[in-house]
Image (cartoon, rainbow, N blue to C red; front, side):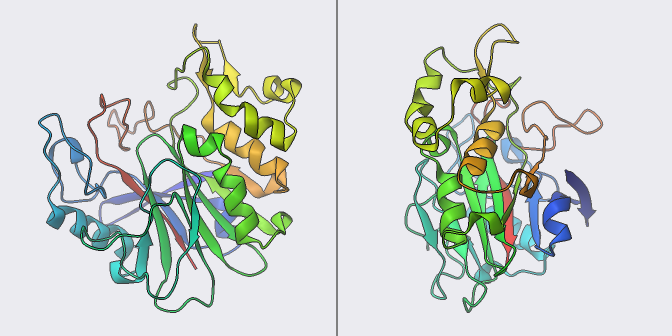
Length: 285
């Protein structure tokens, strides 16, 4: 279950499961930053465009990193942001990577997941950014190592969360605890009739049966057309990789339809017609 927090106007969510294991982390909302327009206000993307094909200013984005990470006592120069490409590459952050991705000039290599070992110098946190895709924070309860993962439909279909869990735990997934952050819900995520075929290979590899697909309601026709529950797909794939069911915290917060006091507090690619910023998710070692 996710808990809402607010500090100096910045709204962010934390997992009660991760907090119980003293894992510092945050799933930030869009509130509390300095950007305007479709990027209002805590946008952390240098590359997304508005309806006029304009970017948010680099100064705004860097300030937003400073604001968000500052709520956790982290400096952007000691954080690493994944350079996301909707694939399944997971990289380990090294002591030379501090600050990469928090400025427009110095990026990580292409990846959608980052792992941070407890003994890595000069780096305190790893980050991903999303706007409907699934952010996942993982931690090894034994070692204190942490990971941040961006799982869109492509990364999910390639099993990126499972890959990160096995790398993080050095093959001991029973030690992994994780939280699935705010993402698009099944009601909002309409997909094509053939969408299920994208997951056939990873389902076969993990031994997921048609009965389990039905039981976990990974695909639904409840809303007239096929809809997909990306959070549930990632959760089941993590279980099939050896992560214990009780060690998976589902946020159940939708970026597209959930709001507070009539205000949308997350960026949503679908909800904003393809023109939006991205919000930050952070794992701290």
